Image (cartoon, rainbow, N blue to C red; front, side, top):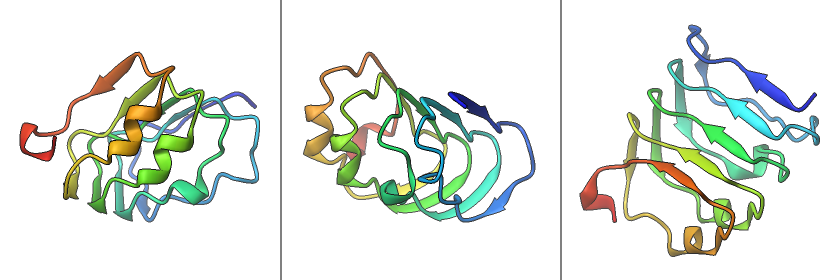
Amino acid sequence: LKKLRLEYNSFSGTIPDFTGMPSIEVLYLYNNSFTGSLNADKLPPTLKKLKVSNNTLNNEIPSKLGEFANLEVLSLNGNEFVGKIPSELGNLNSLQYVISVPAERI
């Protein structure tokens, strides 16, 4: 399984652990009702596209996302993240597209 698209559902609770699916490259979880932190330890390191927009995720954007070397698309908007964007995201050399977070987070 390379793509898992679960957008536009009514999923709630915390984002589940996807590490048991190590071949996933595309994970779309946007427009649901996920809550809590975005735990990068529960995401497969093979991700190329991660979209978690328009949920109710909070706390800080995890700096560990900066270790996802293949990440090309990152969508975080429409959540309740706090703090600054981690400088580690600057390590994402493959990143081509970021869907915005509020300017005061930069």
